[in-house]
Length: 402
Image (cartoon, rainbow, N blue to C red; front, side, top):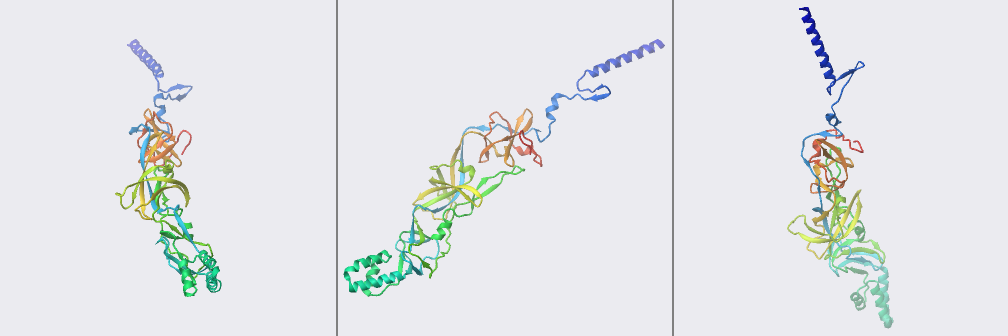
C-alpha cells in the first residue's frame, strides 16, 4: 500500500515537470529569468497598436483617384460697363466763369451738338469788341478777327450774330462732341473700371482645423453710379481744362471677376457664354479680349474683359458667365476625401486594413472635386476623411505634426 502511494506521487511530480517545460516553449507565455517576468508580444498585432493620430483602423468606403483630363464649366460674375477705348473729352477753350451748367449727374445721356454749359470769358468779350472795331474801321482785317474768335471756341453762327447786331455775347456755349453718356473728369478717374463694386464672385477658401471650406467674396467690377456732378455754376475754369468725358453708348464691355483658382486657367481669346442675371434666356457668346490682374481692398483677383461692341445690354447690368476650362494632369477625388490642416491638405491612404494620413499638394477645386498634384496612381483613399478625424483634429503626417 505504501509503495503504491509513493509510485503515484512520483508519477504526478514527473507529469508536472513535463508540463512546465512545455509551457516555457510556447509563444506568448511569460517566462521567469533571474526572478522577473518578460512578456513576449505577438508580432501580428504590433502594427495595429499605433496612436490614433498616426493611423486609424476602420471599415469605410474607399475610392481610387481618377486621372486624365477633366472639362469643367466655371461660373463667374460681372457687370456691363463702358468701353474706355472709345471716349472723348470736353474741355473749356477759354478761361472764365461757368454761367450756366446743364449737366446735373454723372452718366447723363447726351447727344452730339447738345449744349453742355455756357462760360463767361473776359478774353472772349475783348475779342468780340476787337471784331466790331475791325469791321467798322479796317474791314481787310476782318477774316483774322473772325479766326481768332473761332479759335477761342465761338461758333461761326454766333460770330455772324455779333456782326449783325453789334452786341457782344458774354456767354460762350460748350457743346457735346459725341453721342453717349457723360461723366465728370474727376469722377472718371475714381470710378472707372477700377472702383470697388459689390461682392459678386467667390473662391474656394482653406478650411480650418475642422476641415470645412469657407468662401471669400470678391469685389465685382465697377457698376456705373449716377452721382451728382461736383462742378457748379459760378466756378472758374482755365483754358484747356478738361471737364467731362463722354463714353460712346454703342460700345460696351462685359467685365468679369475671376478668383485665383479660376484665373490661372483663363486665357486671352477664350470663349465664354454669359447672360443677364435677371434673364437666363438671353444667353450670348463672347470672347475674352483683355485680362488684368487687380489688387483691391486686400483681395487679389483678375478682371477679364469681353468687348461687346453694339449690344442691347445696358450699362450697370449684372451678368453671369460660364467658361469651359480643361484641366490636364493630376488625380481627382471628391472634396470630402481631402481634409484641410491650415495650409496643408491631407488624404487618408489605405494600407492593408488601416488608414494613414498623407500630406498632398492640391490644385483646382471645381464642381465638388479636388485636383491632387501628388502622384497617387495606385492609392486607395477614404471617400470621406471626416469619419477618420476626432474632434481635436490632431493628425500626425510623415513630415509634420498638427
